[in-house]
Amino acid sequence: MTSAPAPMTVTDTGVLRDALGLLKDREQVAERLLDSSARHSFDPDTELDWDAPLEEGKWFWPPELVSLYGTPLWKKMPLEQQQDLARHEAASLASLGIWFEIILMQLLVRHIYDKPVTSAHVRYALTEIADECRHSKMFARMIQRGGAPAYPVSRLNHQLARILKTVSTTPGSFACTLLGEEILDWMQRLTFPDERVQSLVRGVTRIHVVEEARHVRYAREELRRQMVTAPRWERELTRVSCGEAARVFSVAFVNPQVYSNVGLDRREAVAQVRASGHRREVMQSGARRLTDFLDEIGVLRGLGRRLWRSSGLLA
Image 1: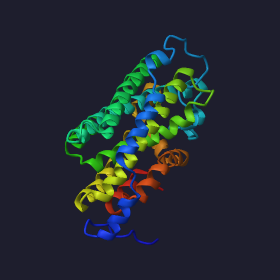
Image 2: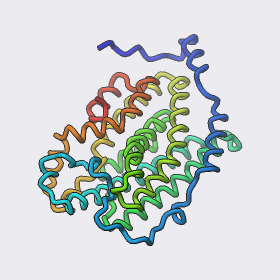
Image 3: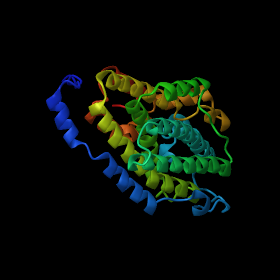
Image 4: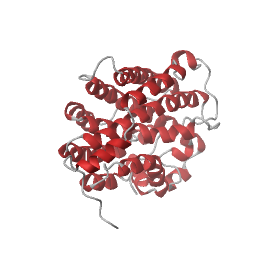
């Protein structure tokens, strides 16, 4: 395997000039995203039928995306228990989504704090914050409607996120944003057309996929810009913080309490998930589009790349 190229420094003026030439105009990107937001935004409170009865025999999450799918333990579980685990994992993922979106909203507010308030870039950031407010309320309502409990992240990860929100630089913020958005987005793109899944869950994931596509575009364009223009120390910090976030994310993705709550031995379930080749492939497939992009713009280098590998999200 060839070694990764040395990080570009701001003194490499020729390389910097070429890279800047590839960047899209920040205001033009924001204007297009604002136009898309005006045409394709949803109010989940009125768009979805929250009072409709749940459909008997349908899943809350595609079985192939449930953490234990294909393991020896899964094969021993009756269908009702498999579907109950899917219901709890859907609640766990929705809880994780709310946690990420609250972090993202705070990072976005920090990002625009010293930006021109009349710019399209700031107006789109505020539009995205409004989207994330609706998404968080929508996920919370879905958890309640499904009858499973909310699943907060561990106290350690909760406090680590508090530190992240305080010290994160702009490129680190957008790298972590993409980590929180793109893997869940990949799973939701498989969920909303799946007729085996509850109509309410399909509706929730459809709204999230449509609106999240804009958020991903905004974050990608800004992270690409930052990895060209930020000083070397900030790029290096982004590589490490993004790798550490990937490691935390992979651990927090499904709260292990879900196994106890459906009558399984928690330690055995966690061990089988860790040993599952199918689960590893699901997580790496979900992350592949993101890791290809991060590799392209120079984030997956050095210690950061090693942390991504240790997370299991990078093949």
